[in-house]
Length: 166
Image (cartoon, rainbow, N blue to C red):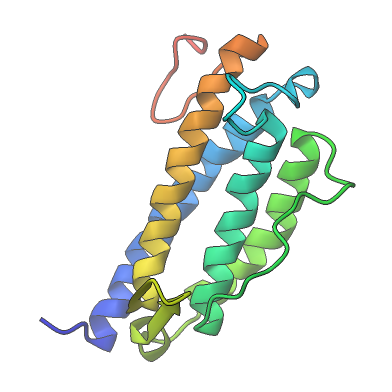
């Protein structure tokens, strides 16, 4: 069954509503990262906590921008020097992803149904990348939430109370 422009628009509306719900939990997890935990990583192959928080934030913007423009672009995803703690990540996240979210909400069904190339690896309708964005963010937010207790922080509510919020 081919994706119609009407279906693409409905999928986008549903996925972006889901994303807005997930954003709230993401912000709670990023907020919970203590400044003393910036360099925490459970092992040498894992990202440090601050870099992982940055990865969550920057890749959401990466996907939103690609859906809005109809193309993925390789950009600089390195954490800027002025992002020194989780609160800086959170401020950047709010400032940059909210406008992109609003742009995505305004896309037409035609824009959302347009096939977008992901660096020659896969080609999918733009709307499909919104779902991938949500799943990617949830995955890495889960990693970051698992860092919190070893860093001495409390795990916030994500899909309901955590053991720390009861």
